[in-house]
Amino acid sequence: MKRILAPALMALLAAPVIPVAAPAMAQQPKASDLSQVNAYIRAVKTMTADFSQTDRAGQTLTGKLTLAQPGKIRFQYQKGVPLLVVSDGKALTMIDYEVRQVQRWPIGNSPLGALLDPSRDLSKYGKVVDSGDPSILSVQVRDPKRPEFGTITLIFKREPAAPAGLDLYGWVALDAQNNRTALRLSNQRYGVPVADSAFRWTDPRPRGRPSGG
Image (cartoon, rainbow, N blue to C red; front, top):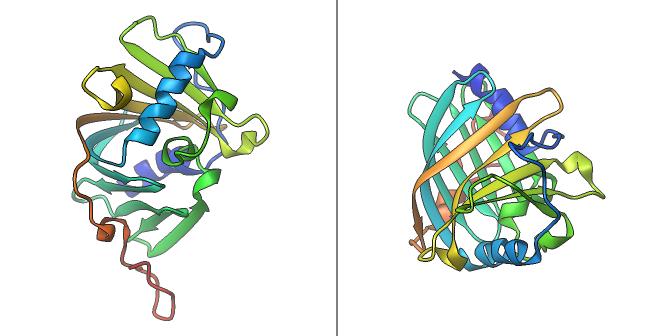
């Protein structure tokens, strides 16, 4: 299972990616839509959700996502998957408990940085992608000055009761090796208590290495 998941995680976290193919032509940035996405990211202090992650081969894994701004996120995969992904606000860490390896990336170097940094202005490097459905708002984010940091397409449902009128539905990343990762959320809960311990992890590496928590 780990060998199936690892390429998808690399696409999601840190691999250089190319723009995601959209079902319709990309539009020019809409200031109102991009401002609404900015407002959503700044309004969400905490969130939990169930997720379903699918790779290009159609293989799917599930788990639970926990988010706390600024910059903290945890992907807890289903039982039997020996991988954990955690951001402590500074770096994303992928822990492989099967082979006792740890990999880290600065959060700003990951496509997920667009979601985890409320100080960033999406109008500078985001564009609205026409989904063909007025109830869906899709924004493709890429820093033109740092294309190697990757691209992510954030997908929102317009929901008046949700923060800033948007509910995060999921996202898509695609790397240069065509490793596509699609992540869909459900059971989103906003403003829930989240303990700092959610973003700590046990270091599986041999003794003498520093522990992450």
